Amino acid sequence: MKSYNLSMRFITNSKNNFSIPVYGLGTWLMGGDKMRNPDNDDERDIGAIKMHIDSGVRFIFTAENYAEGHTEEIVGRAIKDYERESLMIATAVKRLNGGYDKFVKSANECLDRLGLDYVDVLFHHARDLETPIKETARALNTMVEEGKAKNIAVSNYSKESLEEMMEHSKYPIVINQVHYNLRVRGPEITGLRNFCRENDVILQAYRPLMLGGLVEVGKYKILDEIAEKYDRTSAQIALNWIYSQGVAMVATTHSAEHLKDNLEALTWKMEKEDLEKLTEEFPDQVEMDEVVGILQ
Ligand SMILES: NC(=O)c1ccc[n+]([C@@H]2O[C@H](COP(=O)([O-])OP(=O)(O)OC[C@H]3O[C@@H](n4cnc5c(N)ncnc54)[C@H](OP(=O)(O)O)[C@@H]3O)[C@@H](O)[C@H]2O)c1
Image (cartoon, rainbow, N blue to C red; front, side, top):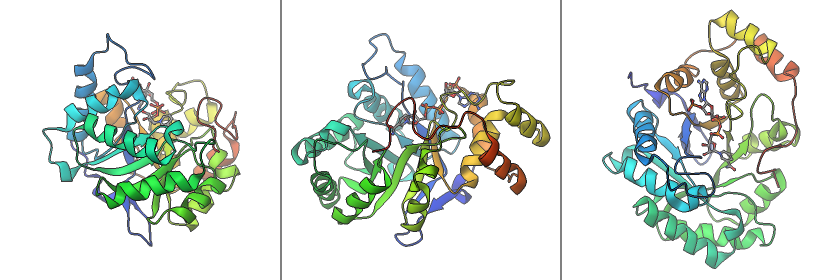
């Protein structure tokens, strides 16, 4: 398969100069869901991760709570033959491990499962309402100071929580990963997207295809019409729209054809009027995430 040079398609924070590729791989459902699936075809997942790397994808996101940590082991096995410096590996400590000791312990266990000395980006998966943000910030600081996290980030943090985290963190919070796509507009409506733009935090969309719910022909007339106009697939229109907002994304696929589709979605520009039409007229828009991880 063709390797796409994504080097031209990075999003960079202007002040702290941190960059990530616009398109990254998410690993949810590899190895199981929240629980490990003993019958999982690990080799198939490893194959999918390698297919992404061989196609030029450099950012891989995984998490401690995916398949009880087994997804991190799968990622570790998939990346072991690649040059470490050529990849950006990110993992997330689970929400309820936000307290200092739990966070540091979890983050070290993540590294063990990945078989790495450091991750490029260490996330807190979602705000732990039981723990002051200050404590989670202290743990993130420690991981940077011990050289185990090159950068630190959050996920599902509201504007207010992110602001508080930034106050307490000694190092830049480089990414906030949130549910964002043509239907889920919480980050826009709550002002989070603009806050991130103004404060040098990259907004990274998860579920950019709404778990495949934005790819079905015949479901959304507006998507079908715009896809036809550009001779593109619905998935490509949905991803291109996200990119055009200055937002990065993590998506997932096991299909070579879908991966090609997705990477090619970022190589062209949609006309302004179509982008605006999608922004304003896309049906069934919801403010908050109906599925998982409400911004808090
Ligand atoms: N931080 C958080 O709280 C959080 C929450 C949810 C998800 N995430 C991360 O975000 C990542 C991506 O989200 P997601 O996996 O939930 O959803 P998604 O990427 O929006 O959708 C994935 C689905 O879309 C299909 N697909 C992908 N490209 C396609 C294409 N070009 N045409 C048709 N179908 C296509 C895939 O099936 P095929 O394999 O058949 O292509 C898969 O079923 C996850 O893996 C996870 O790591 C993070």
